[in-house]
Length: 116
Image 1 (cartoon, rainbow, N blue to C red):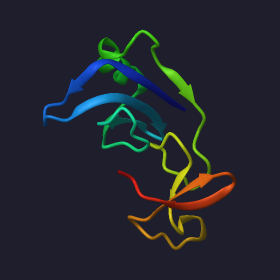
Image 2: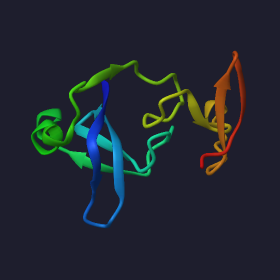
Image 3: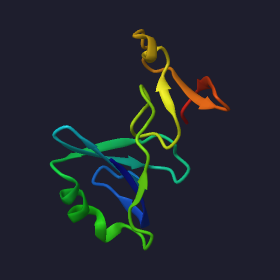
């Protein structure tokens, strides 16, 4: 399950990062909360680990705007769980990942993607 939310106002973390939106992604034994430091960001700037979605809601609901949490489809195979569009590590689908190099699915084709 993936859900995302916009924050009422940018939230400043303890290390000074401004967070504009967040995405919750459940995993086998807990969940990730991805943090986005730019309103237009496709991929997260950092993440946090929580024991459960309920713990995320308890910690973050006061900052979430009036639209609340919106559901997202699960990512395509081999794609990044924190990305709002289909993005994957180049070569990951064939078992030869080129870490640090990404591809994005556009018009049915995988093309080079350089995160900002």
